[in-house]
Amino acid sequence: SDILLYYIHFYKESSEPAYAMVYSTTSILRILLILTYLSSTMAWIGLVRTFPIAEKPNKRVQNATAIDSKFKQKSGCRKDKHCQPSEYCNRYEKTCLNCRKEGETCRRNKMCCRGMECAGGVCRRKIRLGTEGALCTKDRECNYGFCCAREKGQNVCKRMLQEGDRCSKPNRLYLWSHQCPCAYGMKCRRRKRTNKLLDLIKDWNDESERRCVRTNYNT
Image 1 (cartoon, helix red, strand yellow):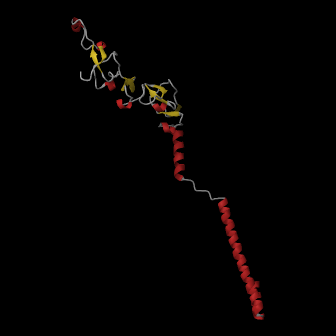
Image 2 (tube, rainbow, N blue to C red; image 1 turned 90 degrees about the vertical axis):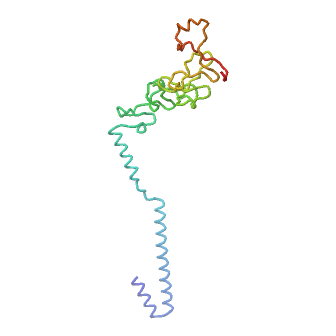
Image 3 (cartoon, rainbow, N blue to C red; image 1 turned 135 degrees about the vertical axis):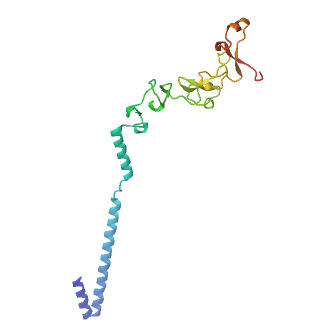
């Protein structure tokens, strides 16, 4: 740069055309320097795009993963979600065990493998809702002609009694009974006896003497 200024000063004093030539030369050099700077900057930008700066890891996710892994190592599991999809959590031993297959004993649905449910303490294949044998809590959850009654400690959809079937006295709390009431248009009535003496000997409340009988709605 000092040499360049010296030539500029020399040509400025000697002649005006020479000074103009040198001045134009310095302008060209400045332009070249600017272009060089811009090209290097663009090259750096392209390099950054090609090799992006790694994102900072999410500390919350890392902490949650670390806590979860430490929890599994120290105390096993506390819930089924701590185990693999094909496993369940044994809450007493706090260990993950393989799911139970059809016919094996169970205490809840999560203990059974996928596509099965725990009914009556045994794993079985899921039954379509509303059909016979499906789990229920109310009558309206069962299809027409079925009721929700007890069976092996659970409520399931059962077929309502038909004409001639043995029945018991009508009870509004049949949800806790093992038997459905008579079907629509029928009533549970005691069979008529020809010998009245048997009425005195036989207990009136004998349920074996009751049957579902088709009646009119007016009776």
